[in-house]
Image (cartoon, rainbow, N blue to C red; front, side, top):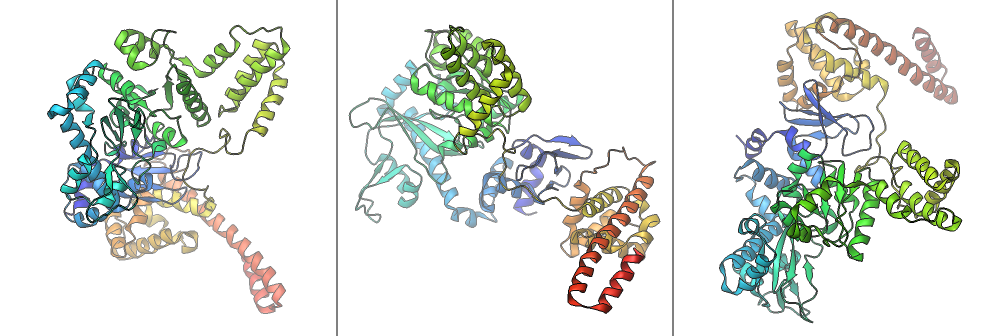
Length: 597
C-alpha cells in the first residue's frame, strides 16, 4: 500500500473538509457551498466512502490531498507532510521531495527553535528571571508546557549557532525570520549574522494545524536598545500576521462546539483564558481583524465576541476589526469589562475570574452597543448633535451585509432620533457612495478564491441528473438503452460513460456499476462515474424503487426535447452561415433537417 493510500485510509475526508467549511448530510453524500467559487446554492459534494469531493459549479474536485492543496495554497509534498502528521504516518516514499520544499525546511527550523526556547526556559539557570516573570503573571507549569512558552537570553548569536549545528542553512535561518543578516555578512564563515530575538520570553505562533510558523518575543528588561516591548517574526513564507490567529489551533474545536469565538487582544490574554477554562479564545495579536482572519474564523463559527483593551490603540484596532467582521457577515458581540475594574482579560481574570466569565456571557450585540455608546447623553433637541449621531450610526448600519437587517436598524434609528426612515435611507446611500472603493463589502458575493463560473447548459444538467439516478438504479438500464442517443450527452465525460455502459450491456445484457467502473479505469476515466454518483439530484421528487422508472423515463423525454431544441438552434445558425456563403446545397439539407425536427 502506498503512503498516500495509507494516509487517506486513516483520515476521514468529511471531517477534514468539515474543518474548513460547513457541510451537511445529503443522502449518501455531504453537501455545502463551494469555497473555490461564488455560489448561492450548494453544489459542493463529498463522498465519504470513496473519499472524494467535487463541485458541480466550478468543476474542481479530487481527494483529500487536492482539497488541502487548494485551501492552503500548498504543493503536493507540503500537503502530504501535513496530512501524514495528522494521520500518524511516517512518509518514506516522498521524503526527498518533501525535504526539498523550502516551506517544510522553515517549518523544521521553527520547530527546532521553539524546542530550544522552551528547554532553555525550563532547564537553564540563566532563565530564572524569565521563570520568575511568568510566575508573577500567574502562569502554571502545565500552561507553560501546553503553550510551549520559552526564553532566550540577551546574547547575539546563541540561537543561530545552535540551529547551524543542527544542520540548517544560514539562508533558511534568515528566510525564517530568526536570524538577521548584516551588510557584508559572510555566509561561509557565518560572520555578520545575529539573532532577531534576544533577552525575551518567547511565544510560538502556530497555524490552524499546530505547526509553528512564527514567534512573538516579549522583552524581559526594557532598555534603549531592546527594540520595543514586543518583537514579532517578520513576513516570511510561513508567517503572515494578517492570516494567523493566535491560539486557533487549540481553540478551534471548542469554538465549533460553542458556536462562538472570543477574540482578545494579546497572547497573555489568550493563555490566561485557556488556563481559566475558557478555551474558545483567540487573538489577532494587536492588529485589527483582517478578511483572511475572518475566513479562518468562519470555518468554525459565524459568531464572535470581541474584547478590546482599554488603551486607545486597542480600541482603534478593535473598532476596525468590528467593521470588517460586520461586512463579512459575522454576528458580532462586544465584551465590556466593568469600567475601572481591569484593562484586559488577563488582568480581569487575575482579579476575579467570575467577572470575566460574566462579561463574556453578557456580551452585547454590536449594534446595540453602537447605539448605546453613541446615544447615551445625547441632546435630542440639538439638530447638529442628532446629525453627528446619525452619521456615526449610519456608517455602521451601512456595513451590515443583509438588507432586511439594515432596514430594521434604520427604523430603530429613526425612532430614537424622531427622523423619518426614508430620510435616513437617503443618507445611508450617500455614505455608501462616498466610501472609498474596496472599503465596503456588504454587497459582495460570499468570499471566494475565483470568479463566478458560467452555468452549464440545461442539456448537460439533465444528462447528469439522468446518469446520477440511473447509476443508483442500474437495473433499469435495459428498458431505456434502446432510446439513448450519444447526442443527448454533450459532456465528453458523460458521453464516454454512455459508450462504455452501452458496450457492457450489449455484451452481458446487464449493467453492473463496479464492472463499469473497472472498465472505465482501464482508460483512466473512472472518476467520471464517481463524480456522477456524487451529483446532487436536482428533482424535488423523492425517488425510490417504486417511482424511479417513471422519473428516468421523464428525464429521458426531457433529454430528447432539449437535445432537439439545441440542435434546432445550431441549425438556424448554420442556415444563416450557409445563406451568407451562397451554399444552396448545404442550405437545402439544413432546411430539411430543421423540418424533420
